[in-house]
Amino acid sequence: MMTGIDHVLIEAPPGCEPSARQFFGDFLGLPELPKPTALAWRGGIWFALPDGRQLHIGVTQNFTPTDKGHVALRCTDLDELTERAAAHHIQLSPDTELAPLRRVFARDP
Image (tube, rainbow, N blue to C red; front, side):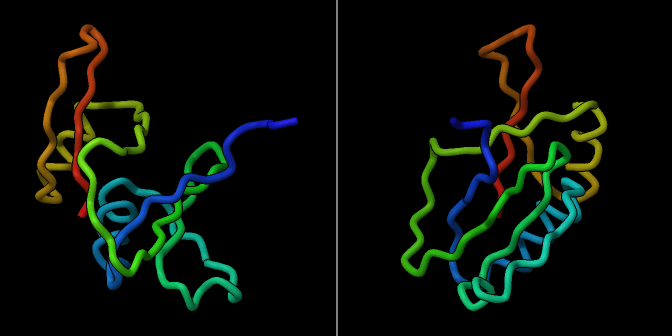
C-alpha cells in the first residue's frame, strides 16, 4: 500500500522563512515550491528535493529546538558542499563514526 515518503516536515519558529530560504534555497540549492493557498496562512516554506519528494518547513508557535531529530540529505560531492558552506558562512561538523563513509552535520537556522 505505501509507495514511499511524500514529504518531510521540519518544525521552526515564527518568522523562519528568510533564514530557511537562505539555508535550504541559497546554500543547499533546493528550489522553493509555492504553498497551496489554503495552507499559506500557516506560514512556513516548502522546498523540492531532487527525487520529487518535498521538504516542508512548518511554523510552530512555541517552537523548541531539539538536538537529535534531523533530516539526512545526500549530496554528490561532499568537498564541494564543504566549500559552499564556507562561502555561505555555514559551519559543518565532520563525523567519522561510520568511516569510511564521509558525513558532515550542519545546523539549519
